[in-house]
Image 1 (cartoon, one colour):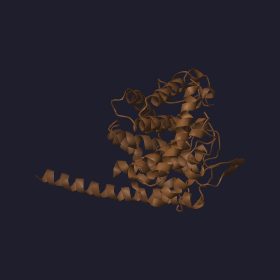
Image 2 (image 1 turned 180 degrees about the vertical axis):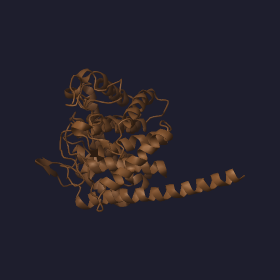
Image 3 (image 1 turned 120 degrees about the vertical axis):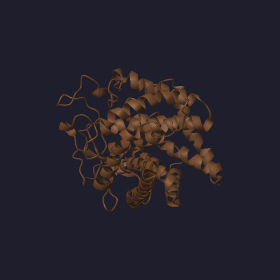
Image 4 (image 1 turned 120 degrees about the horizontal axis):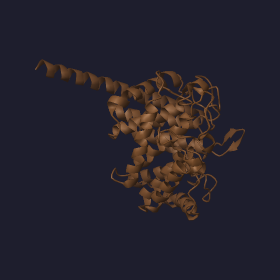
Length: 379
């Protein structure tokens, strides 16, 4: 009897601690997002980094993926007003139009279709006008599919930028052709591009053909870029979340997801972060927030879905969140240790607590994705 009573007391204490932690997670997540929204109060303003770019570019599109996730747990109308203003300004159209085949251009379509489905389910008065504009996203995908080519994703970042969009189109229209085409492109990148960008033996990915063997870092290790591998991990989460577990594509991607999870947890730093160069810390190691956020995103989701064992992965997520919350997020919400744009660990160095990356938006987006999924896990 005493043992039962003790167990009940411990359970109540754990629930109380979890609730407090969940509230803290949400507070810190809001702080980071508020910083970004205040700094970029007008979401239609172009980005200027060496040259002018419209705010529908991939870096901003990733931010909106994170904002849409935040809205799921914190339904602040400001978030959707901000999103709709941005999307309407760009006419709910992929960057560079409906004929683009560049995954970076297509990335914004993920938020467009997510927002459409939200409004459709709510019966919002905007639905009809918005429904008409979703044809631009679908038309873009149809144009790309008409080429018959599957060799577009020559860099692994592209898997996150575009692959979920095809599965959203499948979910929206019920037409399997979109999922079929996306999987053909995924398999080409995985197995054929540069001889295959996925290392089946280890579960890591090479960023593009420039980094496959015999390329190695100066310390003799392979070059696996933290954020690049994180992009693929996030893409698998976003796609699997749109499929039924019995779907053959879910099962296929699940195998890669599990192998990648095992690989990533094997190289987490003791302080909770992941290195910029995952297995080559001597060359370009150091704390990095975007990759860490994406790994937190995938592992938290995997536990929530029963795919990953909490005994193994929960401590890793707890350490990752503590690192992000205490060492990346500044008191005003600015995110430190965000590596700027590039394609490898050596780009945009140094990555420090105070260094400002060339683009801040995707860093915030990655952080929001990871923070929200961790919040769901502990809530």
